[in-house]
Image 1 (cartoon, rainbow, N blue to C red):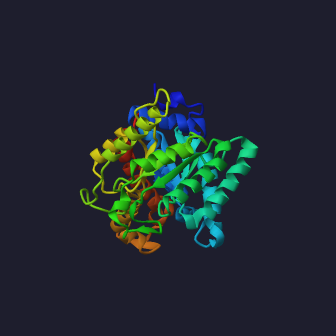
Image 2 (image 1 turned 90 degrees about the vertical axis):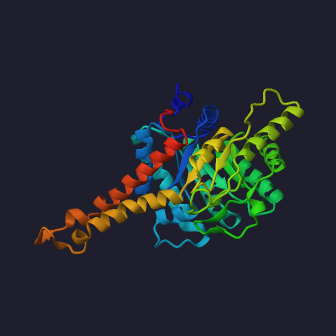
Image 3 (image 1 turned 180 degrees about the horizontal axis):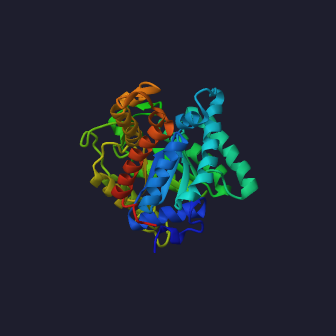
Length: 365
């Protein structure tokens, strides 16, 4: 039995109960699904190719900046217009192409801070429009990240958005405890280290507030996570805290009279993993992490393929005609974007495959 056996929709973008079933299967079988930040059709297919070859599910996600880039940098982003249009366009593209790769895909959007809430509002408008026509939302899930705000306001506002998503059985990821570092314009490099570690009481409060609304939610809890590029060992992660959170929530639910509470009642998400050791990922997965965000490493992987091609083929891409093989030799087959963009796809695909193997996701279909 594999992950596809618990899904009603075996390939393409999955939604609702299938997302819940996939994350539950991942939690039970101790693997986590890499969530790859995509900025173009090229990064989408690089990720899908890796998932297909590795017989794995995959999460494809768009950040606010990545969505704006997908729309085109020439589009004005006043009132989040480009980010909304780009995310919606990206979603339709993924829905169209994903079935060709034969794997289940969770279509997600990344960090939405308070100042970006109009972006989330616009995407939810598109979700509700799509739901009326297809009886499912356009996106599988969204992330709301109000971790920089007061905890009470964070939880209350998240609950309000979950109430909007719930009729569509749409998943909502939220964050409590700040992820340090900088990514995609969100800069938390100077936060107090204590803010990087979520308390168990906060996890219980979130669970108690959100679970009566909908079961379709996950929590990105802080356990020392930092966005950006760091050498292994420079970031002090404490994934064992997630195990303590799970135990605390189970204890509280059992004391309140809830029956048959599992050892891992919470779906956790791992942010800011660049530079983490493989064992740190595995420890977090053992404590209920079902999704791991991957952005920085993927950007570098994509760049490296193009960089290496341009360096090795420098004399073939410097002019349209003329190269070491002859001054009259055309260079079109070297500077054609389909050639050098593909090199970026190949190195990114290799890196996604590595993540799928590291997180025990490979071969789970």
